[in-house]
Image (cartoon, rainbow, N blue to C red; front, side, top):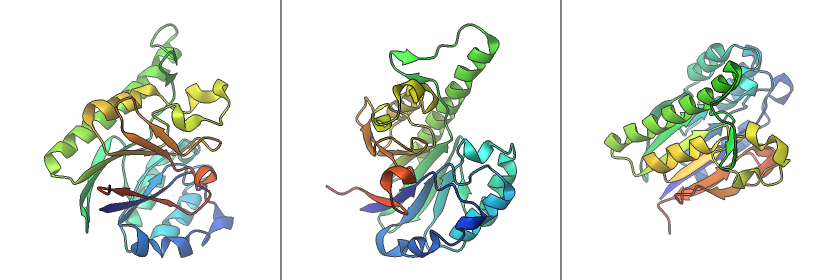
Length: 241
């Protein structure tokens, strides 16, 4: 059995230093790794990234993250990523990583993702250039997630997890105003997950959404935005009955 701890949308700033560290230090008792599903900062500043870095530096379990839209707001995602990596965090964007756990090797494929909507109510790659680019951004993200998951086919993993910030399914948006669903995720992410294969999909972003969902192909989806799970992290068990 592999125990995956996950949380997103912790939105840390200078006044929240130390808020999560006590809970994170209990991770070895209940989890084999920690996934961070984006929006780790409030405005994507380097100062805020350093707060997150101090919160997770030296933890006794591997930490894997993707960035969220808030982490891009200051238009310095490369610097935010560098600060987190310097603290030992594996930050993914269209990439895969393998973590060695007591229960086996866990492959994580990660990307921020983007919006666009869901089947029957989605944006199309048509019309003005800016509209085409909106959809193409999501498609490129989904394609990179698919490629990263397929890469893990060669890694002899006991489990594979898709880690995104934006949601791959509408299920976990229940509670959010339907009008903003196209800005909270895209069915293209779910298509990538289903065609490449995964045991679990984890995302954040939807603060008013619901925790549980599933792709059309039967992959479990969990919204781990902290306002949804209302704790420092949730733990999901893979390989258990």
